[in-house]
Length: 118
Image 1 (tube, one colour):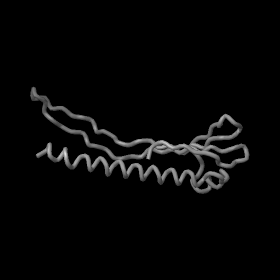
Image 2: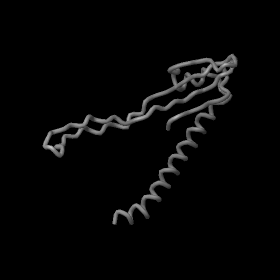
Image 3: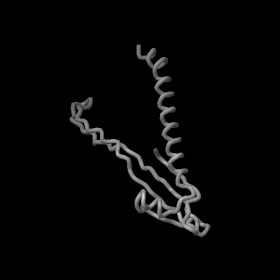
Image 4: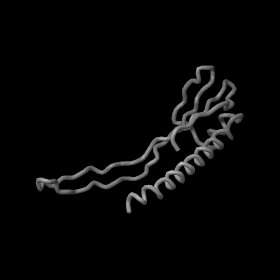
């Protein structure tokens, strides 16, 4: 029964997950690209100040926005091992970091972008 499920249902679930992820990536690309040609002051007004700025190496700057996406925590578990000892596993935190970077020329106009993490 489990093998049948894995053979027939699991590939469909993986396909749905891949399509959803690619849809999210396209939305992020569109959102990031919509800022190209705008002045950095407009971005800062809409998104707030960046967490960090650095040089782009060409006389401009890179505005870096980032955050940690908390997906929750699995609680610790109490169990008895094979020798009768009571053991405890620590809670496990789950999440990821996402970063959005905007490249700004010397005139303050956004000319490119990069992102990592949905």
